[in-house]
Image 1 (tube, rainbow, N blue to C red):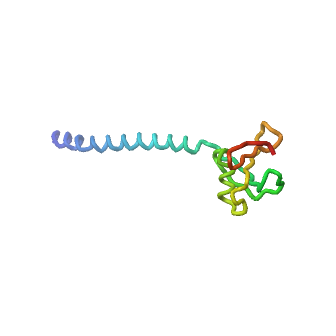
Image 2: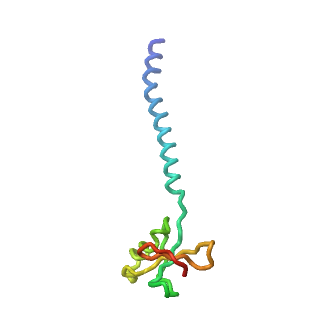
Length: 106
């Protein structure tokens, strides 16, 4: 009888180790996912050129350096010439980025 209990306990040991390992892996994966989604999204207004006051539309990006690329990829009317602008609280004007990565105020 005592020997049967030891065998049952020994057979449960790998199962318990597996459950503990899986739990640790889930916690680690959740931490990495939290870091991946920690970035804030930024709303970008797309314009055909710097002088235009009418927006072609809006896109959402996670990196302002990708603003113009996102506009030109999303809107066919841009044909590679659109700029992406976002509102920065440090400036009165919008900050714009062209396809070359140049930033300027609009």
